[in-house]
Length: 329
Ligand code: 2F8
Ligand code: CA
View: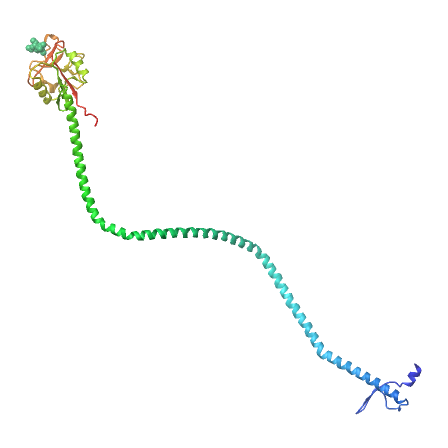
């Protein structure tokens, strides 16, 4: 090493106007040319290497550094953007969590609405079916409309016919009423004739039987009762006239007696006795209670004043009386 050190001078730079040299020009080389050449090559290589290093460094500083710095800036920017997005996502996540309950409720409401829509759809189908049926019926009605118009045109004539029919109906009812009256009269006449054919006489709603046999007053009353009647009462002058005229002057028991009472005259059929009205029917001087034993009354003469009181034990013909009762239709 010391030999080499002694052989190789200390390196230093000298720069003149044309050359750059690692070695000083002095003292002049004492080495051989090959050594000089090797050294020059080495120096040259070193210079080239250093130049390359310098150029590379410059290039790296000029190109890569800005690119690298720009990349780092981009990374920072992207990181900030990502951080912002992460923040947004976090915020959205919170929002989504807050809205999840509302979404569940909305989902439930949606399902309810779907169910309602299903029902509404079913109802709409039913309504459509009904609408079709109604449409069909409407078509039928429409087709019948002309017939209805024709019928409407006939209404005035029909009304006139109806009026005539109503008038005829009223007349028919009137006739029916008249026929019913006639029927009742015929029925009444038939009933009367039937009773009359049995020997009774008819006068103003009552039948009278003038017997041809004689009985005591009491037996006569019993006979009348057996024929659904009583010895006759007399309640009017017209009836009195009918009786005495029909009797023709023969004595007939009538239903007036005071037997069984406190001496008061009374009708045996229960008709109230009108003493004042009856005064005009007594034979003048009667009733005299002849022999103090006359408690029954008979028609004695053919006149309005025909009543006489006589003994109830006498036997006379008698007059029974009963009401006319219409038979069932
Ligand atoms: O003179 C009146 C008198 O005549 C008859 O008796 C005698 C009558 N008797 C009979 O008819 C039974 C009385 O009643 C009558 O008053
Ligand atoms: Ca008398």
